[in-house]
Image (cartoon, rainbow, N blue to C red; front, side, top):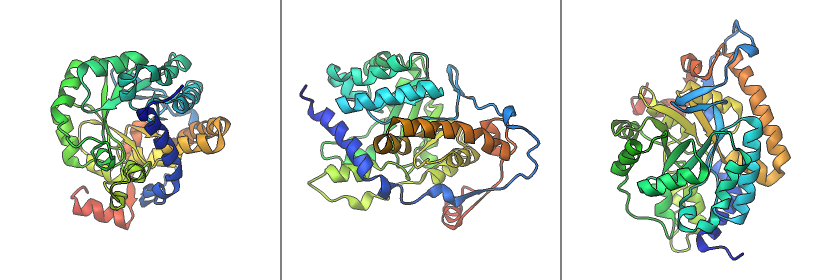
Length: 345
């Protein structure tokens, strides 16, 4: 079946995410966070409770989940099927890519509904832009039988995208959706991080769940620049705050903070928890394994993460993920300088 221009763009995103993976991940910003070793944990691995409660009706069995990746094309349907099968097997929550294409082109909906078909009892998170109408938001939720909705903030991506939006009045609409929808709403960046001011503004209009999604992982400015044949916007490749910087910006905020962007190992998940994240989304790292090495390799990787994570919590003497926020840490030069200049420590 001939696919639409929007479906083709989804495939371009997948291809370019793989092509730009090494450059986007050339800096591992979590290396700038060092944890203080606890030589006397006084607990056993079996004492760890790896569940996290993000909101009423939104409990995750593990503190990391499959963050939004794709949907909207035949290739995306195959990827989502595999991801959903693995999410079900490993009891991981899973977010889909933006359902905007499914709202405009109903023929693409099977590339999203396959997620619920393969994972009927798991936590599934729908995903739309922050300008979504209430009707479209509810339709997206219904398509997936979703447990939560992500509203993504992607101004940097849109401004680099040749066909992207140029008008970003989102805050009032976000407030309205949070107020009127009867399930948890997560507001997330798409890889450019958040400042303390942004997080405060979201919290002040009723947002309880914020994914700071910082620089260090999939870079949509870089991806869209590769698609943009009108302008060279490569100077935005390093735009935004890193995920550790964004987590420092969020410290002290009463919102529930989620982290994503540049998470490539269980130790990154733990470090994000130490910096204040209450759950962690992983997209690019897992997608790269799936595309490069196949489903069996990703299955093995997820098994490894689920094995290592409780051991790391034990090593730090933490019986649950929230306890990580009590763990002392030190920051390397660049991150320490950032925190000082921003008056975050």
